[in-house]
Amino acid sequence: MQSAREKFRQQGVGLAAISYDSEAILGDFTRRHRIEYPLIADPKSEIIRSYGVLNTEATGFTKGMARPGYFYVTPDGTVKEKFFETAYTDRDTAGSLILKLFPELVEGNGREVVAPYIKLTLAQSDEAVIPGSRFTVATEVALPPDTHVYAPEVKGYKPIQLIVEAS
Image (cartoon, rainbow, N blue to C red; front, side, top):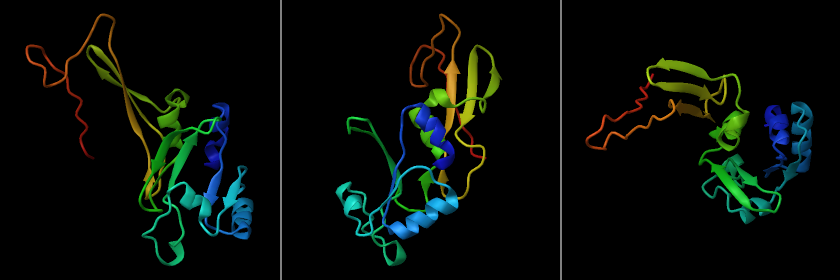
């Protein structure tokens, strides 16, 4: 999240993180990783419980840990979006969140696919990811003026279909 902090700030979005770790552990983590947004210590998982994200199945060193994820909260306190996973090892990348929340910010990583009668641009949220990272792949379809398309189930017209093949 630290590497994407400036892009979030440009959208008027602040960052904060809540962890079941102690203040000392979070302080050390903040220094080592040069984190510039607040990390909130919740060693008894009280805040985590109040948000309803406590991982009740967690045992051992992960007991008390929240499900990994993010809330997008507006300045008036409204939860606008939630992105949560079941395992702490799986989570959206910051780039994926930016692409989902603010697609207009993603620049320069799209690739145009040449196709007749259609403009197709492919983009991805991150250039590199590690195991457990959830990233986003996006497709933008633009049609020439006065053109419209039909889904495969429509009868009497020539439908279009986007097929994504597994690699």
